[in-house]
Image (cartoon, rainbow, N blue to C red; front, side):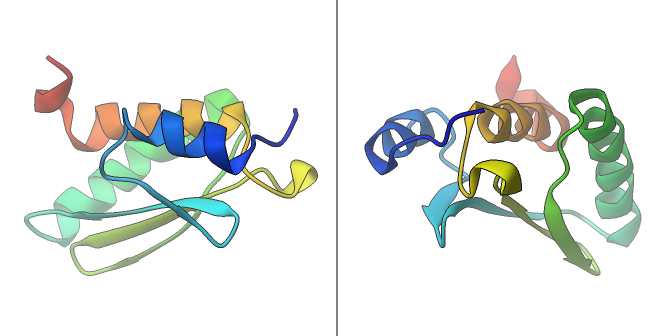
Length: 98
């Protein structure tokens, strides 16, 4: 998988307004109503990650989920990261997908 240029990444981010590009990775932070909702979303995301065989660097504190995506083998952001970011968006903000 080839590393994307910064220009290409910025163009692709126009369709993912919750995500930013810095430190050679895509970053997002999502806030949920409570810990249970946050952990539930993380569980659903984990299944998607396994299906795509691509795994985020992530953490959660109570109801906040912080995610960083990059393709370590490419030393940067690739198409895999955008595919996973879109899948994550569909999980954490399903109403916006309709």
